[in-house]
Image (cartoon, rainbow, N blue to C red; front, side, top):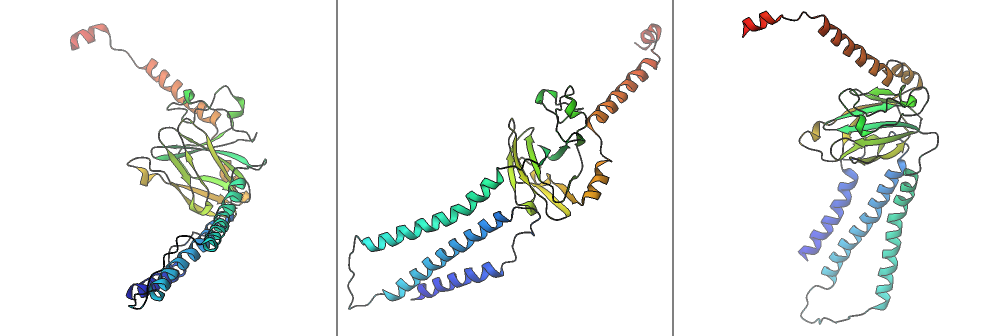
Length: 291
């Protein structure tokens, strides 16, 4: 009897805690409300089943509690009960899977007008590359990656010369514009995740993964790495800023392109070579005296 009361308290307390819990989703800022719907449907179905099973157990403990004048009856098969259990379980499984499958179908079907933005993850920072005026990202190759070209952009590809590079800064995107996030990792597994966008995807070295989303409200949101990637995992943070179209254009014109970055590197290198050439060399006698 006591155990039956404990089970009832557990079931009722779980339901109350669910509705009074301080841990809820952050307000959504993208088009993926279907993800929230799928999760809420899962909560409802599993919550009803959980509560029903717990209360049924409590009922059985009370209804069939020990009495000296009772005898147990062994019933190894019950076709009616099995049909009901199989039918209800099938309905529950379909109801659980369908919202997720529909959302996944949308998730992997990128709109044709989506703008591509490349995200590069490395221990422990985020870098971004946006298309320039031509609206197309230039090709890349891991063989091109070095200290001066960390994105590995192909310098011979004309489409990449106007690409906007953001090696260390916030990612900006305009509100209401569909974006395809092209994801790359240069060292270990990472995962690009903005909680308010709901969507996320693993970043695997040697592979290009992606997802798409449409920002639905302006603001500044945290970028997190949702895949453990080493001792600095907790510090792998960034910012994504969703701007109005006007503010986005103002930010965009202040950024440097790949061609500008390469020209600056070339200029600095030329200057260093020139300074080295102009520096007076010590004569042989001086070197011999020093020895």
